[in-house]
Image 1 (cartoon, rainbow, N blue to C red):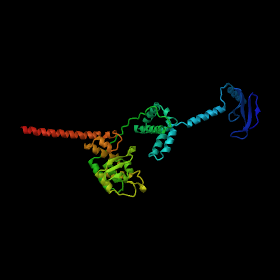
Image 2: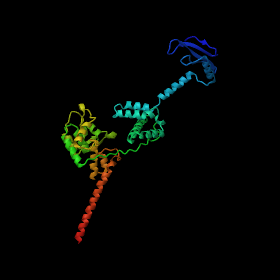
Image 3: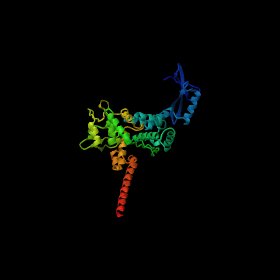
Image 4: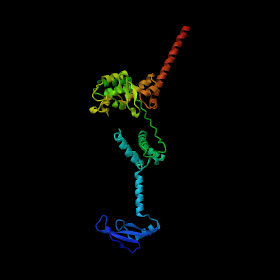
Amino acid sequence: MSKRHKTDYPGVFYRTAKRIGKKGTEKVYYAVYKKDGKLHEEKCGRQYADNMTPSKAATIRGRLIEGKRLPRKIIKAREEALKAAEADKWTIERLWSEYKKQKPYLKGMKTYESCYNLHIEPYFAKKEPHNILPLDIHRIKNKLLKKRSPQTVQHVLEQLRRIINFGVNNRLCEGLKFKIEMPKVDNIVTEDLTPEQLKKLLEAIDKDDHPNAGNMMLMALYTGMRRGELFKLKWKDIIFERAFINIVDPKGGPSQKIPLNDAAKAVLGSHIKTRSPYVFPGRGGRQLVNIGKAVNKIKKAAGLPKDFRPLHGLRHVYASALASSGKVDLYVLQKLLTHKDSTMTQRYAHLRDEALKRASDLAGDLFNEASEKTKKQDV
């Protein structure tokens, strides 16, 4: 440590030190003062780097003595304590980072990452969940709805809620103090095909030579299985003797069984079985992840509408046919479609009602016919 040099101001001295950023030296000013019976030495600043002078150092010394300025050690300690406290906070940003670490193979992560960066990070990154107010949600909702669809806004808020629930479930933070109100979305699409369209589709499937596409479409039509369930379907999940299919993890719910009807059994019976455990394997026998190109080729050959979804649409055709028959109640249909509750199944209620009305009208016609016969006999 260099030698002390006195100044014209009592209790102020300087030492020479290497200049910061340039050649040569500069003076570093210090103040010495007594407080609470103890002698203290406080660094006031550098000649060039801090534009410090003996006069400024004397002013700082006076403020230290009066208690109007805290010593650097205390300021530094407080800053470090604040940093430590900040580092211990589970903000949305930190929760999202941990969420990604715990779910590295989550399907659609690129989409989630984009959603977070565009819509969540600018508003909530530095906030802890319990500090988020209803007004914060209201503001982002209104701002997004000016340019985005209600469906997109719902996805953003759902992702935010998922991040927060992750933190709460892992006991990392407190949750929200209110329930997020989602924007109303009218996205119920129930696709169907006319008898003529269905005929053309079956013909197109029969002519197609893809090893999986046609049979996957037939299984969706005959069983109502979801696209993801068909991708995950393994031969061991099919119990031919008892005519059941085990649906493993249907859309995040518990595993369930659905009946293996004769039409589906015929499809599986004629389907080429490889060494892969999967019924519809992808490359190298691994699980299939995409078959859009192949099924869309069949859809195009059949001349189906552009907005018809080849696999999910056939699930709707299956459900609509059962509901329209009047022979299947909504509870049974719910079980066949492996819906967690009746909410989604209700979209087919009008078809069921129409079938019941037709049956009722038929009963009326039969009674009227019987009545007319009775009148003729009486005459």
